[in-house]
View 1 (cartoon, helix red, strand yellow):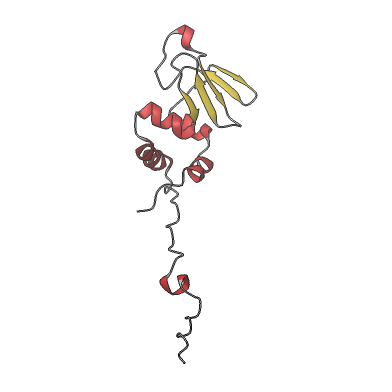
View 2 (tube, one colour; view 1 turned 180 degrees about the vertical axis):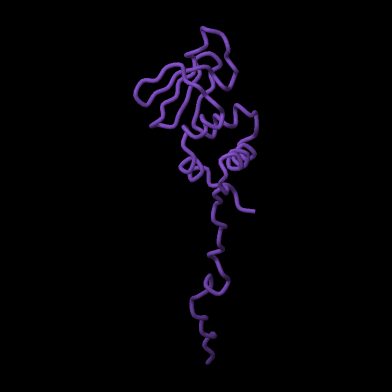
Length: 126
């Protein structure tokens, strides 16, 4: 089975969509940057209300308390505590898209094309 095309998956699902799927409610918004409670470690206290930072244009996040950081797939993976491959499939199910797959590798080395030089002539005899 072909693997998942992770760059295509990150292009198909923006971090804003992942935040919506996680029911993230920012406590502060400035242009295309959000701050709020961390969905990874589940911050609930008043001091943690701005510890989680998201840059929407760059599709990256960082928590200044638990140290979680990365892109939208990393966020989904860390919140749900799943390995990368399983997290990608899980996110695709929740986003209602088919996982983008890598194209299967083709065998470019065929035995007929590998030895495509003409056969050598038989040795000369006197």
